[in-house]
Each structure stands twice: as structure tokens, then as C-alpha cells.
Length: 479
Image 1 (cartoon, rainbow, N blue to C red):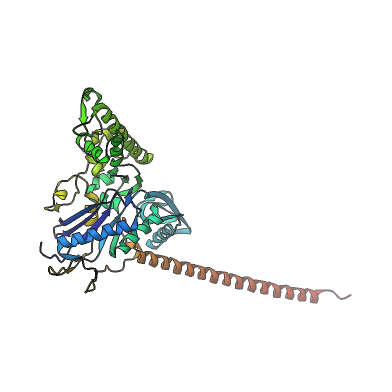
Image 2: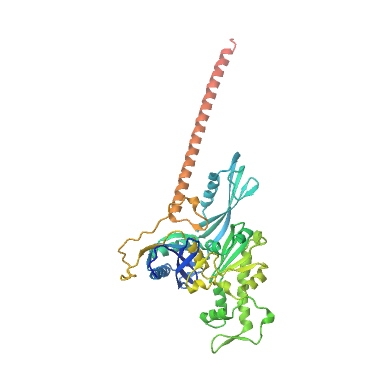
């Protein structure tokens, strides 16, 4: 492969694997995947959350170096997906009343958004905010700007993660000396590339079945309405099979070879046995019961996590993706246990993707999230060429690598699904501080003016009373 001067790099940290991908965006909107690297992460990432910073940093360093080897070009920065067990959504409402009818301005809406971002959740960080409807007096509006009213109510869906988990993720990239161009909320990056506009508009639930977690994202009227990560995934099926006294590696093979999310009772041969290895077998019925019990539990948890107010609005149905969605008859099982008739398995992204890499061409849903991160990336990650005669793994850089910088973004320019950088958070905090100081100064000036007015009135009253007494004295009859 010749040296490439322009490409984007994305990294997804999953429970079973860390995946690095590099690709180019073509003028026609298609994506060309140039390199793909994956490494096992089961020893340092659990349920999508980093718990061993050193091992994760080593893995990230290895992935970047392997990508550089394939690309023959240095990587200056990467885009990163944020997901994992602790992510969940919480609704919040901010209300503002006005003294009289006025026309709602963008500044008024921004004030509500700023107030929402300023909320403090103990031990949790707001990663992202999805605007819901605004209530203008008694009417719900998606865009309230320009409407005359005296009451404005902003409804927001705050996406939270435990602060310590988010800090650990950042520490991993710092320890690996890898610059992060942007962090994206992985479930939304995935939704952008596997859901159609019609599905998001009419109402749908995106279910991403991973190794240790299952992520449920509910959309209606093109707006994210609910997001939750369930701590159950396809690995739970493997572990249940392994309880039949076999190694997990053998259980995984059996799951892939024989596993079915649903089997009609009439189709089960009571005499059939499945081979564990050349010496051992297990009754097919027993195996089927174990697999189906765990799959049913996962689906029931998914069903429970879809808010009741949207359950009957899922006209777009349920869309399944991720490695766990490859299990045989998974659609049938979801229909049976959720009572939703419209089930679709998203095996690949909706964008046009070209690649000679077999894992990408297999269209098995396992790389949809990292492809979504790649497609969302918007800054060149390519550095200088690698000298073929030099030492690629020499840690002493003789030339400073300068990563392209994006222009400073205003806080309200940041798209939904993009996590604010530390600098942007600092700028937002500084703006909030200045605004608070200005409000306090205005209140102090108002108090000063009010006190002066009260003193003036007291003085006038005092002079009036003295004059009144003097006049009364003059008018008093002499004895």
C-alpha cells in the first residue's frame, strides 16, 4: 500500500475486542476502509468499561502501531466511541416564566440548555443531551423560537456515565500518548448508520447485542427518547453452556454451531445429541433449553427497558445489530417475547462502504459501531510518511507530529452524539461563571438602586412630615 496522506482513524473499545479502523471518505459520499485491527480485550475491559488502565493503554498503542504499519503513515489522532454499562438516560425539565407575553428568542432557548448542562449529578457526568419538545404555554413545539408566550419549558434527555469510568477512558489514551480528536457516544454513532430516517421518525428501538452488554436506544419523531445499557450479552449464553462442564472456548463453538434463539418444540428430536468434542456429547433438548432461557432473559430485559409511552409507537419496529444478532432465529424470538411484529436485523451500515478486508465484507454486524465512528469522524488523522528504512517502533520521535485542529466550536454548535472536549467544557464553565457574575452584578446594582430609592422616599417623607408639623404649629390658635 502506498503512503496515504488523508484518512480518518476510529477506535471502539468493546467487552470482547478493541477495534481500530482507518478509512477515507470519497467525494461521492462512500467510505473506503483501508485498514482494520482488532485485539482481545476480555482481560481489561468488562461490560464495555475499562478496569485496567495500563493494559488498555498497551492495547491502544499496539493497535495504532499496527494500523500505521498497514498504512505506512503515522497517525496523529483518533476518534473514539464511548459506551458501556454505566451509560443511561435521565429526563429533565427546565422552566422559565416571563413577566408578560414576549417572543421566544434563540437566546432564551440557549439559557434553558445551559441551565440543563449545569446540573450536577453525584458521581456522574453528562456526556450528551438530546433535546426533546419544548412546551410553549400549553403547546408542545420542537422549535419554539419566534412564538409569543409567557411560559417556556425545555424538556431534555441527559445521557450520563459514571465520572470515574469516563476519566479512566481518558487516562488510557493519555498513558498511550494518543491524541483524541473527538469522542462520540457510540450508540448514537451506530444509530446514525444503521437506522433509516423513516424508522427514526415513525418510532423504533435499536438493540445492539454485544458480548457483555445490550444497548437499547429508542427513537421517535427523529429524536432519541431513551438510552440504556443492559449488563447482559451473548457471552452470558456462552457461560451458561459452559456450565455443562466444558471449557468456554468449546461452549462458544457450540453456540456458533448449534445455537438458536428459538426452536419450535415439535422440531426437537428427543434422541438427538450435539457433540462437544470427539469424546463427549450433550442432549440437544438440554442445550436448546439453556440457550433459549438466557436469550429470553435478554429479550425480556430489552422489552422492560422500552418506555411504556413509546412501546405502542414503534411503527418502525425493533432493529437488531451487533454480533449477538447473528444467532439463528433471533428475529422469531424477539417477535415472540416482545409482541412486536416488525423485526429487522441490521447486518451492515446504510452507507456505501468499499473494502478488500474480509471482516468488513462479511456483513455480520460486528463492525457496525466502529464503522459509524469512522463515518462520523471529520478531521484528517494522517501524519508524515514512515521511512521504510527506519525503525517503526522507535519511541523517540525525531520530528514533531502536528495533528490538524478543528476551529474552536461554540458550545451550542456541538452536534448531538459528540461529547464535549475538556477545553470546550472549560469554556462552557467559564461562560457560565461570567454569566453568573454578570447576573450577580446586575442584581447588586438593582439592590443598590432600590436602597437609594427607599432612602430618597424616607427622606422626602421625613421632610414632608417636618413641614407638616411646622405648618400645623403655625396654624395652632394662641391661648
